[in-house]
Length: 168
Image 1 (cartoon, rainbow, N blue to C red):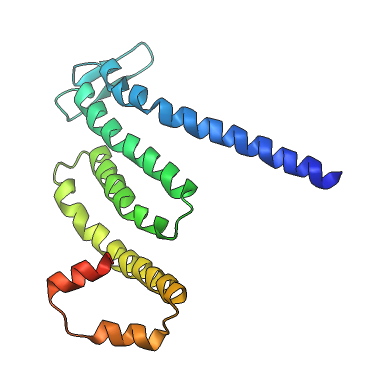
Image 2: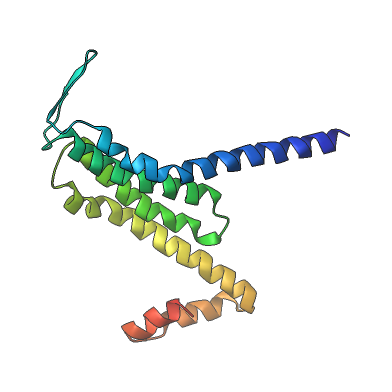
């Protein structure tokens, strides 16, 4: 009896969480176009506050910010719901959008060019890590041992051959 109720509870929680995720994905166009509700001036005045921006207007700032925030939300959902072995590589574009958003919030206009310096170390760790996971999985599926894998890595091949071997 106890096992059945916990299984049903988990099913309900999964259904609720899935519904929330579907709702978030469904409203992303509304979230994206919400930038149009911001004022078209550099000063945003209300009875509660007054904010200034260095952008040409608040609508421009909101357009660029939300244009980075929506892909981050979608990539986060994809990363946490993906059951494939390669889901770690999703962190690379996610990091790119996060650095762009960080640069936008700091209002530094040259951040898009500099972010590659910050993402490169992440890519240098993640890409070989994901490729090694792929290699181990394929070696188990094909029955190859790691010595054969190392021998394959040391073979001299053209760049084009190396690229085509990645997708075989």
